[in-house]
Structures are given as structure tokens and as C-alpha cells.
Length: 168
Image 1 (cartoon, rainbow, N blue to C red):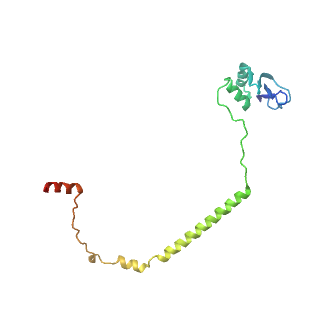
Image 2: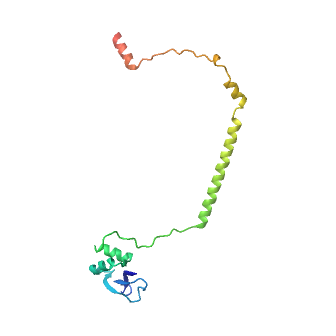
Image 3: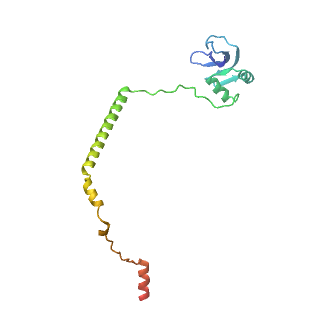
């Protein structure tokens, strides 16, 4: 497979790169490439790329490395969004902390289950026996009498003022 990628050619502390078309099986330092498509100077931010040749090779199936893709997007040679080329950070795993958290969680669950069991036991102890429930439900309906409630109409403060004004 053909690949468009960078090859470093600068001195120490002076990074500059060639943009090359090469076979993906060849190493970047092998010096064996098919075509030189331009260069990129990272210190001076100078980029010179043969846009027509890059488009030709991409149309013929050449793959572009992520960094070269970002350069081509910034130069408006190809369309698209830039890709994240930085390595992803992996979180530091503290095994002792994980064990302590797991033990604390297990203790909390055990304590919660114990409290729930004691609460259920106390509710069962406070419950009334079935005999008293039956006695209450078996009372005849004839003994229950309803007393009529007289309707009492309370006057609002506005109505009271109207009455006072009328009497004066």
C-alpha cells in the first residue's frame, strides 16, 4: 500500500521534513521512496507541497498519515477536519486504592443489609395480632351512626366591612 508521510531530514534541534510517497512496508529512514511531494520546516513554519501530485496519488489510493493529513487540511489541499495526533493519556491505576474502595463498599452494603433486617424485625414485632384485626372488621354497620354536621358560614373580612358601613 502506498503511503504519504513525513521523513525527517533536519539536524539535531532543527526539525525539517520531506513529504514523501513511499511503500508502507518501507521504514521512514530507509531513504527508498517513490516521489518527493514537498517539504515542511517545523521551526520556521514553512510548508511547500505539490498539491496536484498529492491529489493525484490520493485519487489513486495512497493513504495519508495523520500528521500529513493535518498539514494538507491547513494548506486547503484537501477538505476535512484535523485529526488528533497526540497520544492519549492513560490514567494511573492505584491498586491499593481500588481495593480499599471495594472493601469500604462491601462493608457499607453489609451494614445497610443489617439495618434493613433489624427494621423489618421491629416492624413485625409492632404489628397487631390477626384477632384484633378481625374484631375491628366484624363490627356491625348498625352501630355506626352519623351525626349531621351543621353548616356554618363564615363571613369574609370584606363582607364584614360592608355590613359595618351599611349599619352606620
